[in-house]
Image 1 (cartoon, rainbow, N blue to C red):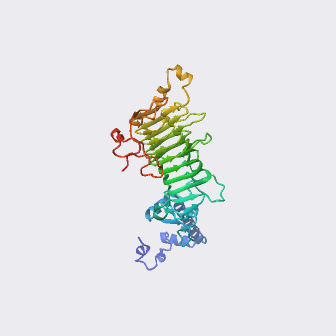
Image 2 (image 1 turned 90 degrees about the vertical axis):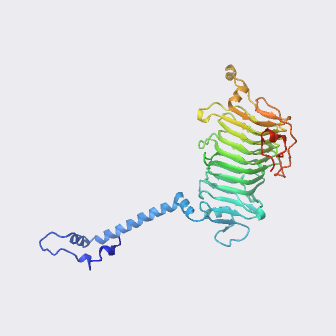
Image 3 (image 1 turned 45 degrees about the vertical axis):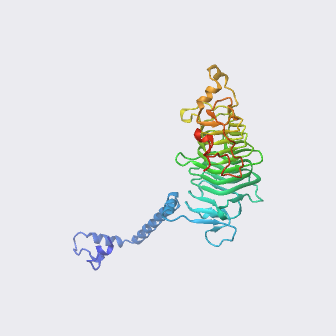
Length: 434
């Protein structure tokens, strides 16, 4: 209630003192006495100062916290910042993505409109908030070419370390034969998405996925990617591992879908360390030595992977395991699901390079029985030219016409018509043409 309402019936509240000469002083008299204390106003000033200081600290903490920023973003519409060729014409125009990131808030969108954008970029430790989108947007929906500056000595184009909810889409990443890896993903990255991106000109891998972890409800998502090489490279997707890195321990909660990997890779997908909750769905593999290569080195690690509805064509081997994953505790038990894939012109569908150990043989285990404990396969289809390896994958042989093999025609590349005999066998691999 306002102070005036408390004092509206008094002319001077401070003048209401007790007039009894020898009697006790009233409460108002006591208050008046306190005010007449020689240090009273010093106490008042100090109290006001402390109150202002506490309020200022609380306000600064609220404004600086990620939750406060997110809440502020939710109350106001997200902004679009532009990176272009022209000089900066306004507060939302920038010449580099890094400059735009410095001004961005969670939920904002950064649109790159240069025909060719040159910049090495590292986003790390949630420095620029979460939920940002970085998008290439050329005329008519054309992809923006992103490459390193000609004077740069960097070996990577884009590094995403410990980010949350970052989304990158609409670019052609071009290593120009200078980069080892075009993109490196590292650390805790829930909700990270790479979408509608082409990769070219790399020497080792398109994406180096190094101890990268999504979350069960917010996985790392790689969708509609296109990695093409004419020169031999190690991998399109390199799931990498270093023994010295303890957290996160390997890669987990990653989804790869609707992507195309073309060229003489040692492996389109190479897996070298602990891999948990990794899924490949509706991808197309063409021209590599191996579609998938499990290469754990001296130490075997858990392997939890699902390979579902992919088309693998003109490969030497569809799935190669240099060795079988070692037994682990139930939480980290290895499991490979191979389901509803299409193998065509693939010399060997699946194999294991290392034979069972002497102890395993003594226990009556065979390579096939050990593989059977690891791999669950069903509803796969192969053409008659694709043969089984030293481990058996459930794949039914079906004669069908050759699939279109021109990677420049992405609409039809490695896709069959709705009149194909494959439709009668459950439409394995990438779905038929629309």
